[in-house]
Amino acid sequence: MGYAIHFSSLSTIKMKILTILIALFFSFSLSAQTIEDEVRAMFDDANSVQWVQHYKGRMNDINDIAITLGSDGETCKGVLWYLRSKAKLNVSGTIINDTILELTEYNEKAIATAKITGTVKPFDGIIANWRTIDEALGESLILLPISREPRYPGYCGDNKWVQKYTGKIGEETVEITLRRGNNGLLKGTAYYTSVNETYLVEGILTNEERSINFVIKDLNWKEKAVVTAKNDVQKNEILGTANVNNIAVSCRLSILDRLSVGCIEYADFLTKSEVTFPKTRNQSFNELIEDEIQNWLKLSRAYTKEYRETMPSLTTDNRSALRSYCWYEIDYWSNSFISGKVYYTNTWDDDFKGFSFNYDLNGNRSISLQGIFKRDFDYKKFIKNYIEKEVKNRPFYGDGFYENWIKEQKFEYFNIRQEGLVFSTNFNGMYGEQQIVIPFDVLIPHLRDGNIFDEIVN
Image 1 (cartoon, rainbow, N blue to C red):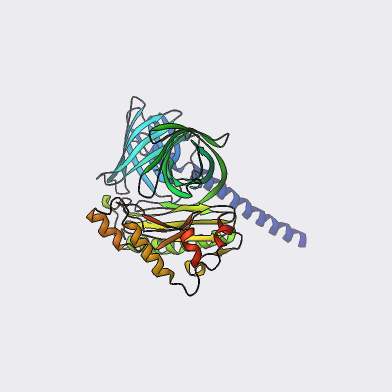
Image 2: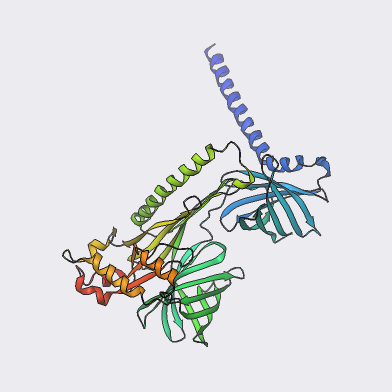
């Protein structure tokens, strides 16, 4: 009798486990077909659907999205969804001559919210533009065809990096730090050893990142060099020419080091957010940056949640209405030190905020202005007087608008570079970020330790 009871109990347990496993299997199987089933159900006659194709890629090189399209030979219908938030929208339109894609996006109430126009090809996939109905916001779409319905987003930092190069532009020895952002855009710095000065770099990667073009300008926007080159990822070098004072010179730069990029992104019907930040091999520095960013993210998420709760329903005006971004800049970076800035902005504050960082990677410590100067030295007054004098040398200082704006700036960000301390304004939509450099030669008499920067920047 005892064995019979034991066997019966065991059988019951096995049957329950088997039932659960079968349920999970069918649940997974059904969910794996959900999007395709939805697409087929959009047509009056599901049997008329000639093909269904899945695509996966990014919107504006940021948010991971997927589109599943079906066609009955005349009409094209499908579903667009964000792989992270799982927010879904219907699309409907045509593919002219099997190439020209024209789709309209609809919300859950079947109201048109955006237009998608571009091309779709068997191997290249979808290359298109997405625009809200009122054309207030536009984004690029690049998606590749895949064999099955995508389920998981990729890592948004995969297509971003920071790379340091060293080499020659003509006869000049330079050290260039480039940051790759969205859509192949580049920003960074170029340090010229002969003059001990750091200049600003802006450019772009094209031809599937095999070609690179960038401009080097000084802090007064004067052009120093225009580089047109091949980006050889196999040899880890940039090889081409540079235009310097209307003279073509050779340009050869080799990669010296790399930084990875941390990334957090999210999007649904109402919100769109992207956060990027540098990640070093120093965990203490990484935690410092991530803690600051998470504090900002909490405020951003709280606002969007509160805003959403006040909306009885979402209209076309709300499409991607709440947008927030966080990005970074690197001023200087070596094995022992990193300095730069992190900026925040969003559509509801219409302002730029942020913080600068100067971190000793060997000593695991942040370096502050107060800690740099002698205790009895009024460094705040010294810096203020120096900046007020230098801004008058800016080429646009005679312009009333620029002059009034620059006088109001606090130059609240400071960073350590190879040649000295650089003080920056907050980011401005018209004038960008203005910078003033105080050379180490001027600073040395007032420092607590005259050798501190030699230890940091080398």
